[in-house]
Image (cartoon, rainbow, N blue to C red; front, side, top):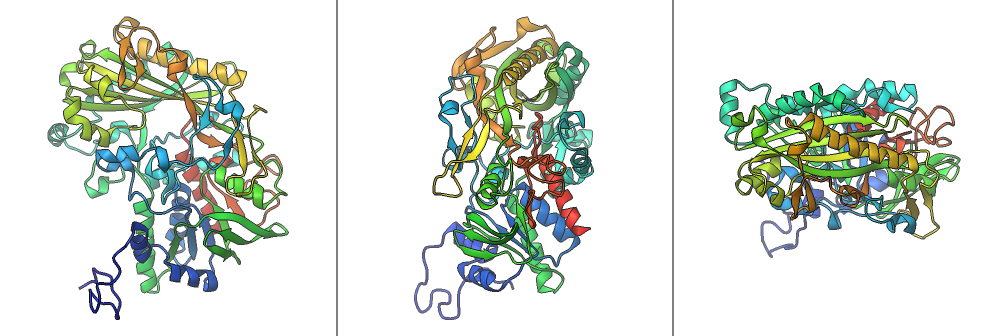
Length: 576
């Protein structure tokens, strides 16, 4: 019988005294999966590693999984700055966990420039922060995973484009990406009919609306393509679940479990993970990283390769503080600015209206570009048909394509006879804007001693105008059977507003916060970038960069799947 309790020979099961009474979630996880204080001491003093990975999000998982799958004896140490918080994506958890999004679960390890912070509504006002917990942003992301086309990867080195494209399939497999119109493809019609009564089906409405948009795409001059949204939501299919947003905590712990079992049989090495470990600085000698200064003491790098896998801006801060010889770090900054539009069309306008169940959802991706500049945008379109919003609230929260950008209860309650269209529209910041920067400011804390500025240029404003216009054309010319006269838009706060014929004003529809930051350590041939084609910062020997910092230009597409693809390419380079 396996041991299902924790005790020691001298304090066994409440004898001779009750024993410790103050466990914490982190102590529990340290006891099972992470390094305890004693194990951390032994690791620092005695262990050597092949790879030390900073971060526990998408790129960390992609790297460790790829390496250990081929070489299970590889010794890997993962350092995570934060504690254990959520076991999986918050959308897979009960409805109250939605409230964990934002607030204290988001930190901003930079000083925002006053010029950005003081912009009026309708402009860029800030950059969304980091999620400083085990799993990082993977526990709170939207999970849209389109493959960028070669044209959409403009300004990228051809070698990097080829590397990404050759790993798209394996990246999608790791993230469990599934197009919205294929979620129930494996079910028989009679089973599908039964399941449709239990939860929303990406079925009749999904297929009809994506076909409608595809056939009317020429009515949107700036649009370039559309498709069923590829969502990282197929993670539970093999376990009998039909829709589960992907996140890294449970998968990383499963990988650690697997390695522990292999190690016990002398078939592999344990995967070691340390939480609450902030890396302040990398010590170097002549461009070789030698040690890490962390909040839990110094870690000797030895012969290990150091993998920076903790987002976009933190590794840039670390590089700038640790390797002053690396030129141009932080000179570029890109991200995605956002327009948010909620609209509705009477359900009876659609010839499939009578076939819909009580709750149905749809998810469609549409890409476009400004014809003059080539700057890109895309629409993440969620469609809801909800005849009983109060009853379906918990169910909808679980199955929504994007619970971060969805309809409010007030919008749904007033639209029981309508299809509701939620448009999260993302446009790329032009990386050539000299007003944008990410640079050291001389403050003391080496993890936050940077200033960030992002201002929309004339080109950015043109892109923003194009994507707003394309969104309204999509709704009125492509998706409304009776045209603009039957489209209404929500005006006001999500929980307090009115439906009106007029387009919502710029100050209301344009969101102040940026997402998908990138380009601060862009990749390029020779000295064209900050990082070379082998993922090493120029002038540094044993440090490798993953994630959005590598993006030469951001395009508009969601970056996570491509981040994972390039991280797998990095791992494959080592395996070769």
